[in-house]
Image 1 (cartoon, rainbow, N blue to C red):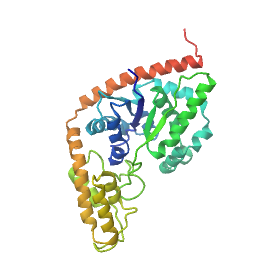
Image 2 (cartoon, rainbow, N blue to C red):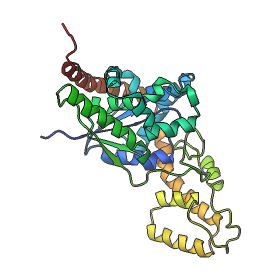
Image 3 (tube, rainbow, N blue to C red):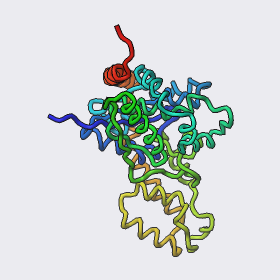
Image 4 (tube, rainbow, N blue to C red):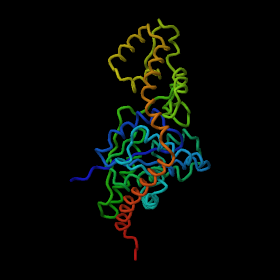
Length: 332
C-alpha cells in the first residue's frame, strides 16, 4: 500500500485562535486528515521569537490552541498534534540550514519585512526572529512534507525552505531533503471586525473560537460597515464592508447573499438586519465548537500533545540522522 503524502501545518500559541484561523486553515485541516499523513505543530519556539520576554503568554496558550484544534474536529488518531519545543531534532536541523542561506536573503523576505514593520522592531530585531524562515524549513523538511497549507503572505517562507533544500542536496550530493508545495485556501485572509487589515490576535479585532454567545453578538454589532450608509434607503458599499466579508466566508446561501448585496447597493437593506443575519450564522457555526471545547479537559490535551510529540520526535530524528550522514559528520 503506497504511503500517504505528508501535510504539515501549525500555529504559534501567542493567543486564542479565531475565525480567521478557522476559514484560512482549520477547516481545511479537518478535510485533509485521513487523506494525508497530517502533522499539526503548536509552534511555541517560533512564538517566543516575538515573546521571549513573556514566556508565560506562550505557555498559557499551548493547551488553549490544542483545545481549539480538538473542538473544530482535528482528530489525534488521524493527525499528529505536537509541540515544537518537544522535538529537539528540529533545532539541530535549523543549525545546519543556517549555513545555507545568507542574512541578506532573510532580510529581503517579504513576510519577514512585513512583520518587522508591524512589530516595530527597528534595529532591535533578534536573530531568532530574522531566522524564522530557517526554522520553518527545518519543520517542513523534518517530516518530508509534500504539502504545506499557508496563507498567501506565507508563500515567501516556503520559497526559502525550498531554496535551502536545493542547496543542501547540491552541496552534499544527495536527495535526502524534499521540496514542499504550498497549498492556498480559497479564503486567504479574513478582515478584522474593524475593517482594517486582517483579523489578528494581537490587534484584538477578531472573533475567537472560544468567545461566548454575548461576546460574539457584541463584536458583530460593532463591526465596520459603510459609514455613508446611514439610512436603510441609502445606497451602500460592499467593498471594505466587514459584515459582507464575513458573510462571504460563512453564509451558506451564495445566491441569497448576492440578492442581499444587490439590495444593499441600491438601498433598502439596513446594517442592523445584516448584522442580525451574520450573528445567527456565526452562532450556528461556533455553538457546537464551543460546546465541544468546554468538554475537553487539560488532562486530555496533555495526553494528546505528549503522544503526538513523541511520534513527531521519532519521525524528525530519522530525517536528522539522514542529514548528518549526508553532511558527513563524525560518529563513532
